[in-house]
Image (tube, rainbow, N blue to C red; front, side, top):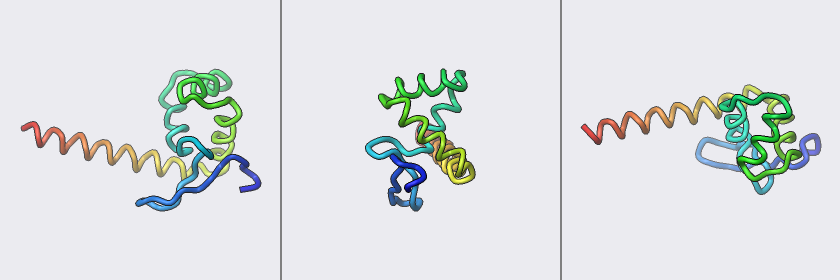
Length: 95
């Protein structure tokens, strides 16, 4: 945690996950960056504004992602699968 000041770890049903202290999980922030069109400094500024964070907080999450991309990408994939499953369930309920 000393290497990534501002990153905390939270326990949950899918295990321990990295998050910004007082903010969103790192995977949520990275998913937001990846879903946008902006890259580099523009992406940092846009994400900070969208999520009501400081540029420094976003950079901390990006640095963590740079060190642990497999962990964060796995969480993004896991969430997408859950969203797909919920959408399928919603369609079944509507039928």
